[in-house]
Structures are given as structure tokens and as C-alpha cells.
Amino acid sequence: PPLSVSGHGGVNQLGGVFVNGRPLPDVVRQRIVELAHQGVRPCDISRQLRVSHGCVSKILGRYYETGSIKPGVIGGSKPKVATPKVVEKIAEYKRQNPTMFAWEIRDRLLAERVCDNDTVPSVSSINRIIRTKVQQPPNQQVPASSHSIASTGSVTQVSSVSTDSAGSSYSISGILGIASPGTESNKRKRDEG
Image 1 (cartoon, rainbow, N blue to C red):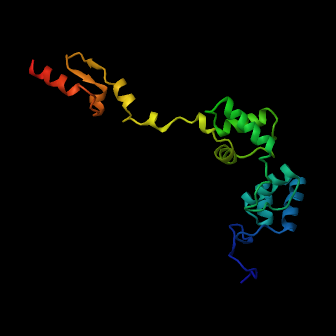
Image 2 (cartoon, rainbow, N blue to C red):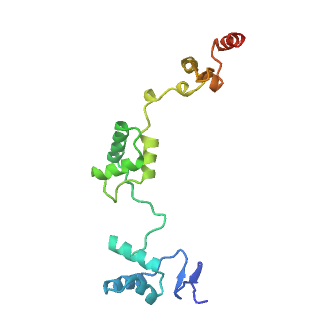
Image 3 (cartoon, helix red, strand yellow):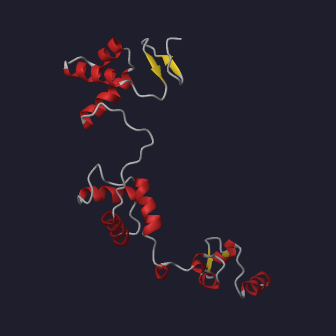
């Protein structure tokens, strides 16, 4: 075989040899950048060096952005950006506006120059910070009973009876199938009359 490197190798559409999951050798990466500096178009670099156009574009994009020809590390995490100052700002934004979305918080961190593009946490990091570090204090949490439809307070509040255009009476409690005190006896009296 033309490839003696371990791994899953192959030949691309241009006849270039590659190894899946391995970065392009530095000499080839350097040559891509040199040709681009000479004004050669990426599609021509691709054909000349037998490297896919996507690979050429990715290498040049990284070079123009960072000045480096080195490959990126797959699975390498960003340095920790959730400094105490950033966490405090996120908590402050959440206190000011509890319904604020993580992406809005991210935009605001950038707009107020708390972070720059390299140090701003991702949306998922902001959500994790909110979940783990910016929980509401227990005294601000709404008791679960107010969410329950079967709580006695809500049944008595919704038991008002209305009449539609056909003259039929109905109540929200009746529609919901919740028996409220005294409704059964009222129905019987109306039915008899």
C-alpha cells in the first residue's frame, strides 16, 4: 500500500494521500500559506498540492485569524473563562432580568466589555453557571401548591357560573371537571325547574 502510517488512510478526489483523523503535515500547511501569499487562488492551491479545497480553506482561515499554521487540537477545551468577575456579572444580569436568555447575557458581556471574543463563555457555559451558581434563594421560590390545579384556593376562585348565547350555564370548574361545593345541588334545581 502507498501508505505505511497506521490508521484509516485513503486517496482523495485529487489523488492526494491522507490519513483520516490526522492533521496535514506542517510542510504541506506551510506550502499552502506560501502559495496564498504569492496570490495563488485556494482552488488552484488545492489542485496543485492535491489537498481538498475545504482543507486549504480551513488552514488559510486559521492562518489569517491567528497567524498560525498549526492544526487545532480536537477536543481541547478553551481556557476557563468563567472568572468570579464574569460569574458575578451573569448573576447581576439574571437578578435584573430573570427571563434573560443565555445568548442575551453573552451579547451583553461583550457589549459592556466584561469579556472579549476570546474570553466570553459559550451559551452552554452561561446556562451551566446559571444552573449551578446563580440559583434563586429559597425564600424567592414560588411554593409548589400555587401551581397545582387541585389546590382549594384555585377551585373556589374559578367556580363562577356564566351563561352563553343559547342560555346554557357553564363554569370553568365544570369544564375542567372539578367539582366545587354546592354546584351539584344547583344543577338539580335548575334541571327540575
